[in-house]
Image 1 (cartoon, rainbow, N blue to C red):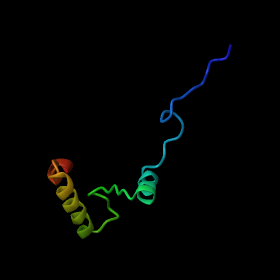
Image 2 (cartoon, rainbow, N blue to C red):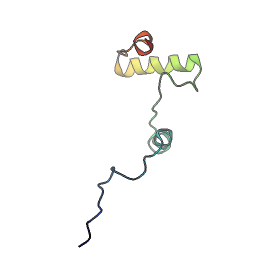
Image 3 (cartoon, helix red, strand yellow):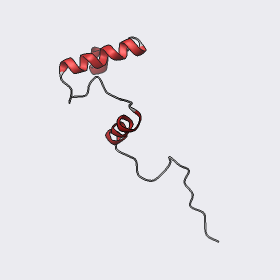
Image 4 (tube, helix red, strand yellow):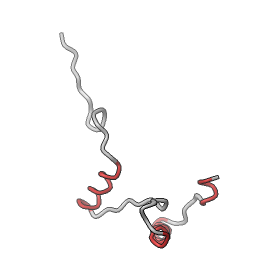
Length: 69
């Protein structure tokens, strides 16, 4: 008797690249996931991301000192 090889959806297989998931989320749903620390952004862009996050969700609990030190 052969053992069944069943993997529930979302388990096993290949993991998608996080940037691909973000890109598809933007293209398909209009959702944007951006890190305040994304080095592809300029300083003013990172500040804007932080301001938007604060406006929508409240103050960010971590400070730069706490994250890096």
